[in-house]
Length: 428
Image (cartoon, one colour):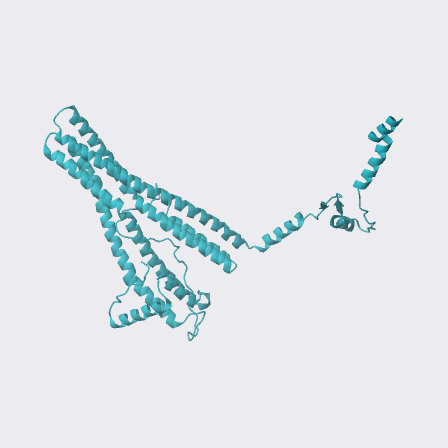
C-alpha cells in the first residue's frame, strides 16, 4: 500500500497531468481584449483597424500593422516629375554625356602618352642596336659573320625608319596634349551646367547653347585617328577653336541714356573692355602665334630628318665591308637619328606646338566673348558688368585694380602712338 502511494507521487496520473497542463496553458496564453467598436463606414473601419490593431505575443515583442505608403510615394514622385521642367531634364542628360566624354578623353590621353613613351624607347633601342652591329661588321673580315651582321643591321634600320614615319605622322605627344585640353574644357562645361542648375531654372536657349558647346568641342578635339585626326603639319599656324561662333545679326541699339550704370555697365567699363581686347590682340596672341610658327617649323624639320637618317644608315649598312665610308655613314647616321628622335619626341615638340595652339585659341575666345557681350545693345540682356569684369580679370590672372591699370596704360600708349610693353595675361 505504501509502495502504491509512493508510485502515485512519483508518477502522477493522467487526470492530474491534464489539469496541470490546462493551468499552464491558461497561464501562458493571454489574449488582450479588443474593445468593441461600432463602424459606420467600411473605409473608416479598415483605417482604424490598420492604425490601432496590435498583436502582443505575451513576452516582449509587439507587431504593428502599418498603413502602406506606396501610393503616397508614387504621388510624391509624380508631383516632383511634373514640377521639373523639360529643360532641366535635358540639361541633366547633357551633363551625363559630358561626364562620359571626360572619362573617355582621360583614358585615351593616357593611352597616347604611353604610345609616345613606348615608341620612343623602342625606336631608339632598335637604332642603337643596328648602329652597334654595323660598327662591328665594319671591323670583321669577310665571311659569314659579316653577312649576318650586315643583314641584321639593315633590317633593324629599315624597321626603325618605318616605325619613325608612323610616329612622326601621328605625333603621340601632341595627341596626348589634345586629350588633356579636351578633358579640361569638358570639365569647364560640366561646371557651368552645375552652376546654372544651382542658380536658376534653365531654359530651352540654355540647352541649345550647351549642346552647341559640346558639339564644337567634339569637332575641335576628335577621339578617332583615322579620318578625323587633326593635321599635325599645317601650312601655317592656326589657333585652336573649340567654341561655337556667335551667329545672328544684332538688333539696332535703342536710344537710351548711358549716364550712370545699367546692369553694372557704364561707358568707362566698355572702354576698358575694348582696351583689354587691344592689348590681348597686339601682345598675347601675336606672341603665341610667333612661337607656334617656330615650333611648327622645328617639328617639320625633325619629322623629316629622323626617317631620312635611318634610311641612310640602312643603305650604308648594306655596303659595310666593301669600303670604310659605308660603315662610317651607317654608324654616324644611326647615332644622329637616335639624337633627333630623342629630341623630337623626348622633348615633345608636338605637345609644345599644341600648347601654343591652345593658348592662342584662349585669347581668341576671350576676344570673341568680349565682342559678343559689347555687341548686345540692350544692357539688361547682358551679363552683369561687374561680374563680367571680374571674370575677365580672373582669366587673365589679374586683380580688378590691375586690370583697370592695364586698360588705362593701353589707352595712354595709344594716344601717344606707342605700343604697350606689358602682356595682357599673367597666367601663360
